Length: 172
Image (cartoon, rainbow, N blue to C red; front, side):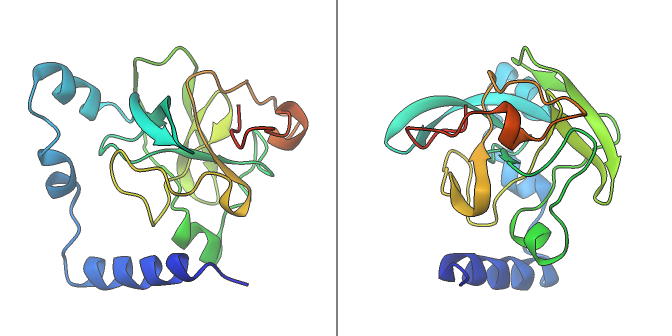
């Protein structure tokens, strides 16, 4: 069974994109009011405060402030998010990703999604239902919000085997 908000969000995003209503400059322009905000917004991956399941947490976000997620079944060498799933959970891609305010490793995985950005080996995604500073995909379809303390994913294991099941709903 599909989540009704996911379907609606997918249709809405497709209509906006087709009409030319979504641009990276428009989405990120309002958050760049200070030099430090401008510098972190230019980074592919940076940190921000967001409400996650009723608690304020430091999470990873993209350059437009959208929360970033990891998918539990992924490995350090393969993303399993393709087709329709990738339309709802768009992979974060960049030929030369940068990080600001993060202690983990921001790199690229050349895979089915192109040059997908990874954090500590975890391929990263956004969620079609999210807006800047809004986390709505936590725990949905085996996706969990990425945090600066996300454990490293090795090439011989999946996130499911290296990250314990969250007892509080958090994937870290």
